[in-house]
Every structure is written in structure tokens, then in C-alpha cells.
Image (cartoon, rainbow, N blue to C red; front, side):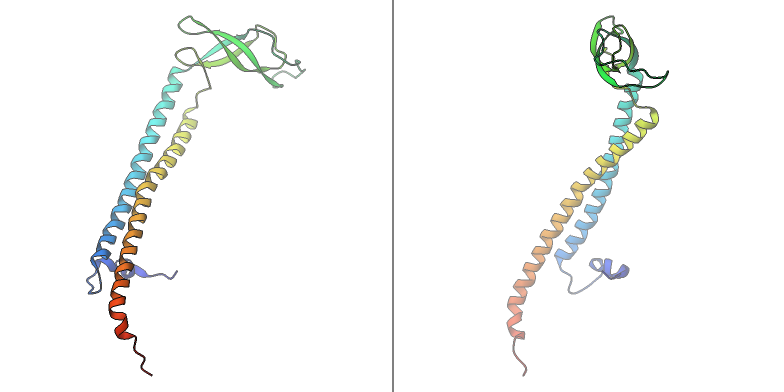
Length: 194
């Protein structure tokens, strides 16, 4: 595609005897679609980013680290590992007490062959239910930014696609008008000059 310069992009706004009403309408549709696309994308992206960031910050405040104990021996054999080394991890049943004093049980990853009563650190929500470890502020910022970008792009796609569909319909209408006029004037020009 060749570079067309600013005059080629602005032809719908110049005075021209060949310009039709559908050309002006299409120009306004294009401008409106681009403005709506930009506004929808930015506003939806910022709103989603703020909502996710707020939710993750609330999780960091409300979720607590609790020490739970294995209620039964973990499956598998305990491997001989040097101090600090992590061996095979298996699912083990643990029990813990919630902040309200109620007793809870669940399954977490523990070392294979761990004895009953072995301490395991778990994260719980305000109701004492198991949750994953909350993200750090940096992780929360990255996650909320990515979600905001995806939501913004998705929201921007709606007016963009709507504008493209409307421009396609206007183009078909313009071609129909050209066909009607060509059918009317074309036979007059069809004579051979040989």
C-alpha cells in the first residue's frame, strides 16, 4: 500500500461535487467508532485494573498464615535430604483452628512420609477456609495490569467491530447506488467508436 498523505485521508471532509451523503456519514461513523473504541478500552481497562488491585489488596489484609498439623501420616516414604532441601511433595490431611475458634481440616502439599502432628503452614481466609498464598504487591500489580489490558482490549473490540460492520454496510449501499447509476448512464457510453 502506498503512502497517501494527509489529503488522501481527509478527502471526505473537503468540498467535492462527487462527494455523496453516504461518504459524510461514513466519515462520522469512522470518527465516532475510533473515539468510542479509545474511550471504552481505556475506561474498561482502568476500571478492571482498579477492581482487581483492590481485591488483591483486600486478600493480603484479610488472609492469615496459620500453622496446621498433619492429622495422619503422609503417604510415601520419607527421603533422606540434607537440611533445607525439599523432597517429594504429596497431599496430606491437616487440621487447624480458625480465628473464631472453630476447627477445620483440609489437604495441603507436605513432605512424603511426614509423621502425624508435623506442622505445616497454610493460608486461611476470614472464615478459616483454606486459600492460596496471597500475591505480593508487585505480583498483584502485574496481575491487575495484565487483566486490565485484556479487559480494555475486549471492551475496545465492541465499538471497533461495530464501526467496521456499519462501514461495511455503508460501502455496500454506496456500491448499490453506483450500480443503479451505472445501469442508467452506462448504456449511453457503450457505443463503439470504431
